[in-house]
Image (cartoon, rainbow, N blue to C red):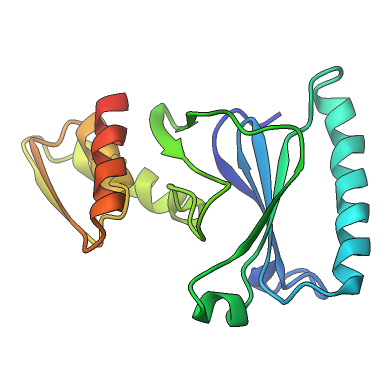
Length: 183
């Protein structure tokens, strides 16, 4: 049962032939299934099968607890128009939705936009940063392309003296300020 936000399945890595379009992420208590190909009639059948597999596994992991999952389609045609298709498939999403990763807390928003507030594929990068900062007391961190400031949150928790976050998206930086307050 995942308690921390994490990537569960990464089909885009090429290790699972036929599944290259899919990723499955946990933003507890919500799973997010993402497809990077256009939705087709076949996609609905695949979603039904995946939904059943999630429900079956969830019944083992968390008997009696509701399953919450979201589907997002992020194909190239939608992305060039600056949009995605996002559907709540089952359950609900908390509001506010706060997730943890290695003791740090982050605001998530899985029902809107292409990005959910925390890039789960950068988990190891944040772990590496924490280790580096802990070896350098008094360090300062410049976080370029900061998005929601996950790297600077981790740096501050690891003891860095000062962080500076830079990003062109004011909304993302505002969420980053909330993330710092959460921690």
